[in-house]
Length: 188
Image (cartoon, rainbow, N blue to C red):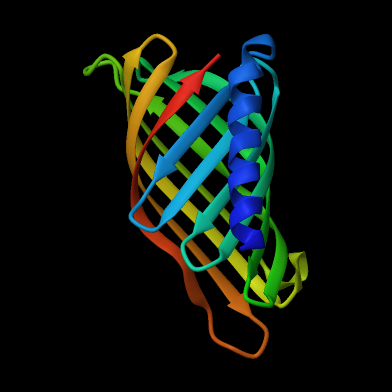
């Protein structure tokens, strides 16, 4: 029960932060699958550094949170606007007495497709090896890909896939989250 209250409070807090983001020029992402919900706040893409915070709740009491820090750049590739970043994703995990923390190295990219106005493709990937994981975990992998369609100047709908895997002490790696999702993004 406590994790449900924590999950709802955290998601509500991220939403409030996202909606107050008009002062900070930022973004808020929210997506759902059949058995999980994810909310994420990111700072502006107009600065050389991007900060982010997210929370994923999976039915049954699985909780993941992430804090992101990336160097970022926006450029053009063959006439397409491309937004990329490299850096860190700190991933925390808690489920039924098992917990872990990892600092993943990786990056993200998003390309706007000029052939289809409003459509962009995005992907990210981060890996935390055993030297950068703590508590009950040996490693973390977080992969995500999405197609985003701009439905108004400051909002996108998105459909995507997320895969999170964790290796635990004395057991083999297992999928923590492997699901398609549907959601939206706000840009402030």
